[in-house]
Amino acid sequence: MSETMGETSVLIVGAGPTGLTLACELARRGVSFRLVDATPGPQPGSRGKGVQPRSLEVFDDLGVVDRVIAHGRLAMPIRSTGADGQVTMSGDDGYRDRPDIPYPATLITPEWRIEEALRLRLAELGGTVEFGTALDSFEQSDEGVRAVVVKGGEVETVAARWLVGCDGGHSVVRKQAGIAFEGETRDEVRMIVADVAVDGLDREVWHMWRHEEGMVNLCPLPSTDVFQYQASIGPGQDPALSLANMQAILDRRSGRTDVRLREPEWSSLWRANIRLVDRYREGRVFLAGDAAHIRSPAGGQGMNTGIQDAHNLGWKLAAVVNGAPPALLDSYEAERRPVAVGVLALSNARLAQAIEQKGVPVRRDADTMQLTVNYRGSALALDDRDETARLRAGDRAPDATKLATLDGERRLFDLTRGGRFTLLCFGPTLDVPGLRTLHVVAQPTGPDDIADTEGHLAAAYGATDRTLVLIRPDGYVGVISDAGDVSAVSAYLAALSWDKDGAMTGR
Ligand SMILES: Cc1cc2nc3c(=O)[nH]c(=O)nc-3n(C[C@H](O)[C@H](O)[C@H](O)COP(=O)(O)OP(=O)(O)OC[C@H]3O[C@@H](n4cnc5c(N)ncnc54)[C@H](O)[C@@H]3O)c2cc1C
Image (cartoon, rainbow, N blue to C red; front, side, top):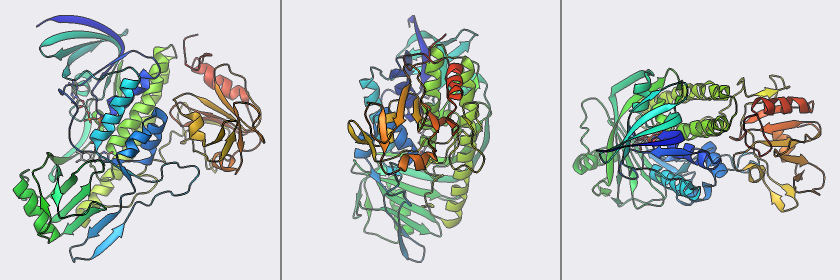
């Protein structure tokens, strides 16, 4: 056993979707980090297979959305067979033809594909995952964190300014930080989940069967040869992960004998665990993703919430490493914990519905799609609008199509991509060196000019000819001023120690 010592700005523990998103966020801003994961290599298994439209927007911003969509299917139709044999077809109640919403529906793809896409992006950005490297313990002071990680019997002490636990539901970081994980475990609510090849079933739809004994589902996983098998296991029912038990459940509940399962590639017994941390931070240690909140998979929210935790924390952490006031980091818990409270309530309601109806609720709405997540009332939300306004500071910054630029037609998200602040000027303009600024004009004559040819931009932002909008690096509205108050925008940026490179550095 040997001991070495390394230094970095941020130590990220756990390379699931949350840790990988955070690593990409830091890598693209040139912030040093280490990303360690205890497992010897990438995790198998479909697990979280529903990617919500808001997460697709995050992936668009990170430059991985094409890869993710290529391995998935948007708006998978669902064929549901009731206990009486009656068949109903349904789909995602998607947002078609909306200029403000680029990704209209939930994407089905296995979680390992998401991780793969993020790892590839991370490699492009010069980062890597240190597999087979487990966090053992850590201690912190006012200056930083000293963490002990173990890799193949080698012990290393990592000195970092910040530590982020993205280490899942059993989080070592959470336990060692002494952060309580409040909630309940319901042993009687269980589900077999497995990835299996299936003979005798088409891959065009997600098959669900409701039976008085419980539900069974087979969802084809795009870009693979397998289906995700899910079967509820009630009190007294056999939870064995054997092929024989899974087949018997399918035969009984579907009433079919022509659908044959092969040996599962991956399987797991899920138990209802519904918990939320009492705080997201202890000094220099943060929690994100399942380390901070776990819930039922009904509604498909978990992985998405973790990805968005990381997207919220990433730019703030990078800014503070580069000299912005550390108080900026207080907004992470203030903005994200209420979102997790809402997600837990939604997932609980969906779980109760699933138990009662002996099937998975399939309806998707703006809440499930996470497009209504907002940070209204946050310290980082400033506007001169009243309660009746449709768009307020703190809301998701909507997209808009049909914008004419000197380079041709663009949508707003094409112009805001890349994780920086963007100032949209419908009227007065503000000259802040290094701040990406888009001027809404009748005819574009300069590189930063956009013409709102169909009025979609003004409609989405409820803009007048004086409106100024500052969009945050994570795609939420930081400032809206219908009065065209340039000093409000300047003051907002000054408080974050804005500098001319478009990064935030010390004064
Ligand atoms: C059956 C099922 C279905 C689901 N369906 C959905 C869905 O449709 N949509 C959805 O959004 N979510 C869904 N989820 C939830 C989703 O899988 C999780 O929310 C998601 O994996 C959380 O990501 P994470 O990165 O926060 O944590 P994880 O993916 O759990 O990653 C944590 C990582 O930390 C590592 N780690 C742990 N301890 C240490 C340590 N001491 N040192 C180093 N590394 C460590 C682990 O090896 C792991 O790789 C589902 C989950 C299940 C089980």
